[in-house]
Amino acid sequence: MLRVLRVGLHVGFAVLLGVGLIRVLLSEPSLGRRLIAVVLTLLLAALYLAGTLAEKRHAAGRAPSTVRWAKWWLGGVVLLWIVLLYLHADFSWLAFPLFFLHLHILGQRHSLIAVGLLTAAVVAAGGYHSGSLALPQILGPLVGAIFAVIMGMAYRALYTEGVNQRLALDELRATRAALAAEQHRAGTLAERTRLAREIHDTLAQGLSSIVLVSRSASAALESGDTAAAAERLETIGETAAENLAEARDFVADLSSAGDGARSLAGRLRRLCTSTERAAAAAGHGFEVVFRQDGSATALPTEVSAALWRAAQSGLANVAAHAHAKHAVISLGYLPDAVTLDIFDDGSGMDTGEIPAKPRADGTGYGLVGLRERLDLLAGSLEIESAPGEGTVLAVRIPLTTEESSL
Image 1 (tube, rainbow, N blue to C red):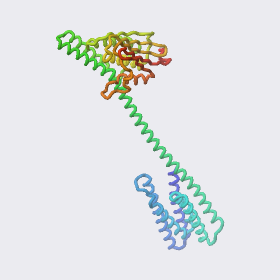
Image 2 (cartoon, helix red, strand yellow):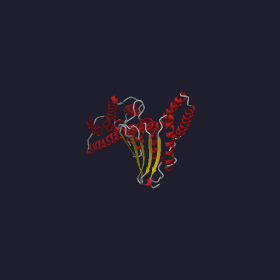
Image 3 (cartoon, helix red, strand yellow):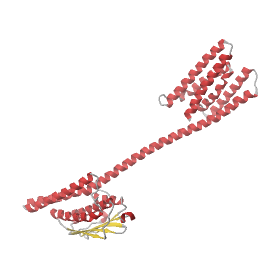
Image 4 (cartoon, one colour):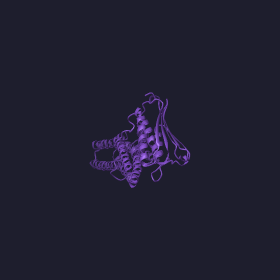
């Protein structure tokens, strides 16, 4: 809309200038005055065109600011117009587009003064060329000036609104870009956290078990017990194979608990067996028992995965730190939740020393990662323990009505 108004202003100036020149050529008997009118008209047209082209180049970003010389340009245009107005009254119509130019280039107070002076010049020229001054010669320019001021103010309001909208749009774009960058950063951090959690629960646990069993195998070889060493090497191979399968599922972005809740109990039983075997091979064996309370129901994949990882992490901590003789995994199905409890009769610990975040050496991530995983499912993790009294790790994940009825 603003572009149309500005183009209309420039076209109107050119048309009125041409009409004035034609009227001079048709009505002026003096050849000299006609030549002067033609030269001045061409000069005014060239000056006006140069200014509008420079302003357009600046608006397109291809030229420096026009603010410094815009007023001088406007002064030259007005000066040439006044000379033409002195030659012939038909150039009076150019006052109308000149009103808009003053309202656009000058400040509000100065532009109103300039419009008043231009109006007075048109009235004076009318009286000079006609030899008398009638009421229409006064009212015509005055009404035109008032209309131009109203239109100029409306244009200024539209222009200001356009600038504000452009600024708001730029701010909105910047906000969207910042939001997209923040979402990307948050997504990256979430993915890193997920990868760290998955690596800890799969590869790190398996490699830790392999290290412990390999040390036990080395000790057996040093003592000459080749049968025990062979058994422990076989345990290492089985553990490595299990971790390889976990790694392949992880790389393929497949849930290791994707078989559903009905196979979760079987997997937990196999986990108990493999944990017993690995602990015995490492030289500090303990008994691990699995039990199930309630009737098994189909669980969402992410819930089964969380329970599986909790069991892995819990038994790994028992094997590494508890020095227990017995451990129990209890899987419970409730009407509105599923639970997983891990008991051991080990050395226990002070729950106040459980880290809230991973330590600087990279340890302590198991429980932190487990809490993060459970938070995603609105689950809870509670740890009850005391030095010398064993440990209870209790996981609870609520189920929606739809999930519990599957």
